[in-house]
Amino acid sequence: MAENRLIIFDTTLRDGEQCPGASMTARQKLEVAKQLARLGVDVIEAGFPVISQGDYQSVREIASQVKGPKICGLSRCLPKDIEAAASALEPAGSAARIHVFLATSQIHRRYKLAKDEEEIIQIAVNGVRLAKSFVEDVEFSAEDASRTEPEFLARILQQVIEAGATTVNIPDTVGYAVPEEFASLIRYLFENVPNIHKAIVSVHCHNDLGLAVSNSLAAIKAGARQVEGTINGIGERAGNASLEEIIMAIHTRPDFFGKMELGIQLKEILRTSRLVSRMSGLAVQRNKAIVGENAFAHAAGIHQDGILKKRETYEIIDPKIIGWEQSELPLTKHSGRAALENRLRMLGFELEKDEIDNIFSQFKDIGDKKKFIYDDDLIALVEGQISRIKETYQLEYMAVADCSGGIPMATIKLRRGQELLVDASTGDGAVDAAMKAVDRITGLHGHLVEYEVRSVTEGKDAIGEVTVKVNFDSKHLVTGKAASTDVFEASIRAYLNAVNKALL
Ligand code: KIV
Ligand code: ZN
Image (cartoon, rainbow, N blue to C red; front, side, top):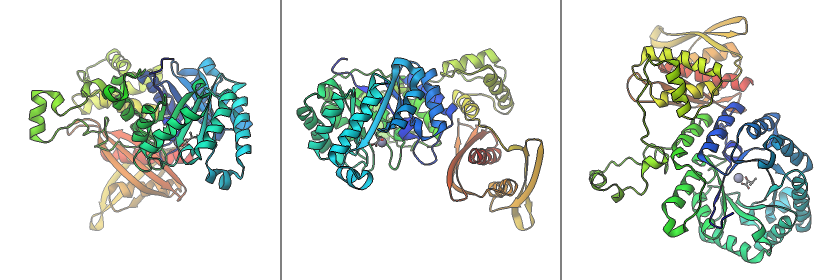
């Protein structure tokens, strides 16, 4: 591999999905994985197979259906984990990577693992050897590497490389590092691990101090050739390093980083960001670099004037190259199925016939309510289809009325199998009343933690997309989503989506 090749390792579906409320269904994960392949990432960490049957199945499905990137499964250095990862990754053949990890810092050794340095080395070496007996491509991560004594880190890395690790990853697990210090650690490892050139040095930074991208870039400058992160920077706590920011920094500043080779299709960045945001239910902040709504919006008159004269005066990236401003003529209710299918293919969706049938029927319904159907409307429909889960309860009917004193009262009728269940409730508003009526029917107690309405496109007839985060019985935080031209209906359907997920 060329010395200037930077490997992009995406862990949106593993570390990213660990973020509370972000869990995705296997179908959603598959669609994200396909989009990551179109984006051109080199490695997709698809999950942690031993953790649950769902994770195992999802890794296996991605391993059998997604071609191009390496498909990776995470595993502790335990035989049962490594065997589960190997089995889930089997359909990927030679594109499979097993990623084993073990904490190396003193605090983890002493309090979490109760093992001394020699025992830790032995467990790591055994884990790498066992993984190597299944696949050629093995990554070892020294968890909490940035708080590990550098001498011990160098010693363990030397041993795992000797045992067959082809990539050694240096995580800043708790987001503690600062750029200069992290870069020095990487340089130290290049100088003090005698066999370091037999492996790719990787970094994996968390954002607790808001430094994940800066630390990753400093490490790349110091010689790291794999960088791990997530789309939109999603992840536990303050998240992981945001891949789109790292990619665009490398692309925009070859004068500083040198000419790096990247396998990324830049024009897919925005589409990937939007898909991940919708699938995970985690909105992208407006001012987020690269993919935020305002990232290329110039409000100041002086800036607008400068841009009109020469774009580069105030814009360091041409937004078009990452997928902004790529609009096609909208479809209308007169557009046929072939036109719809064609547009969906152009947007990158490969759907089954019955999925297209469903989308086509919704497309016609929306066409009666709204003049133009834009690409974003279609994406919302596709995502609704992809996000479908087994529905214990289906909405049959809903109505809201004012009872005495202007207090809203909602009536809800739900179907459960052959049964029709009806109840009504008052509430602080129409949506609150309807959600309470749903609770009376299902017997669940949902506490609404977050409620967000987003207009998918512009105009009064736009589709409204509602995302709710609901805490059920103070135990499970579940995200529900739905879209409709009627925001009240979208709200109830989103709540019901969360109820059905909680029941699953
Ligand atoms: O943050 C971390 O240390 C991890 C490892 C499992 C790589 O996610
Ligand atoms: Zn991590």
